[in-house]
Length: 225
Image (cartoon, rainbow, N blue to C red):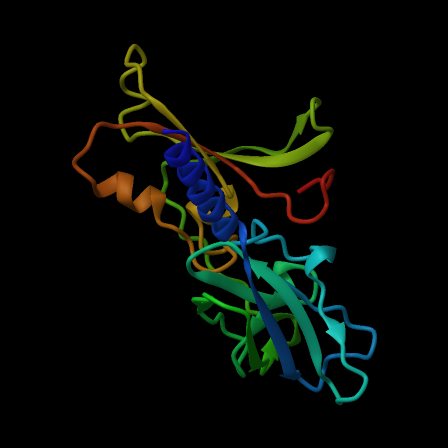
């Protein structure tokens, strides 16, 4: 019995050790747009770091032996790694050659791997026309700079009210709270296309609800919108 217990304990140790091993992905950025200055900082953001666009733990290092080349090595603990490159914010994320959004880069890494990629454009290099608002008439901004004393931050707050909200004052509705308020309802404020929450609720044959959207404040924790 003791022998079997020892064997079981050893197998559990081996399994836990093997699971703890993390593959590493090295990304070599072999070329960047000509607008990239010598002092530009480049970061990788993805589903491994909460999509933080200016994470110093995932800042690329310039390779002095190669012109306009950078590299970073990251541990991979997810089955499918998704990422994009930025210059420190989502306003400066990589783009196609016309400044349009590109899909997330994705790769499955099961062992130490090195890949080479190129960036053909940064979104902030292209002048953007003002986008038209697409928010439903049921969407309202209840405060453009709502103060949260516990966090010492300001955020814009959106609310979607069901169509019968005003005509049924005694009616109670469930409330859904959602992050990234700027992306929920309006193309003119969305980072990469609105999510269409208002259009869905306007047309869906489901129970009505109130949606409260709280803006993502980006990299400035106390920024007034």
